[in-house]
Image (cartoon, rainbow, N blue to C red; front, side, top):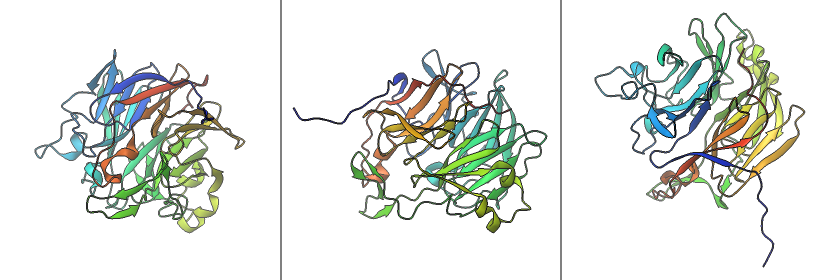
Length: 359
């Protein structure tokens, strides 16, 4: 028998999904588990759900998850890409308003705060046309309550490269690093997943490079530094959150404040723990990497079942939770043929660290 590749890291299956493909997961400070299902072509009965005693249920209810022509897009969830529990009793829901990557619906692209005690929406933040652009795809969000009167939100835009900043007190939002090299797809990046080049391949035989902009996002435990990466890239970047919020610094000057942290592998989701370690998936190598504050990188999981690690979340139990969804096997990458094999999974691994605080 010939030698073979070595796999390592003890992943534990938490939940499996036999229906729509999930992208996001978050664990609240009390251990509640929330997931989301964007509308990319699957039958999605609800776009936000909670796993309760092993059963997946619409959250906060089915009505909020039901959109139709009779309801304003701002009043219901359209197509949610990300859910983030802030550790302070609020679930933040990032709604792209863009089913199948369409132009965002007016009022449909929004950031929604849900009170986890009452399970009711507290506030919804919508965006002006100069913030959510025609090609915008809201991807992921991080919250920090240590600045401003009510805190700030940082959102990656993977459609029109950039980062959106939201003042949670008044809802004022603005774009930063718009079209910058650090938020844009790497033009020389050619991903390989399961040994095959990953490209958009349509039914008519047309092929195009995978061009997804700023996606993964993480914030340092003190809230002073924001880490981010394009999906179509292996590079990690960072910037001072104070500088990012300061609109007196012009866009062309802001570029000089971006820090390059080197290659970390091609990642979808990222998250930080309370000690400042960054965890990032590596979808080319079925792996999860740990990037220490000094820049050192360690692979903590490498296993053939980690088929596209998407969103990451750290629970109060000091486990790292990961959505595994075979995103690269979707029909759009294989001439219209869906190669995904159900079930999709939520898995976890013990890291012995708490999540980074938001306050």
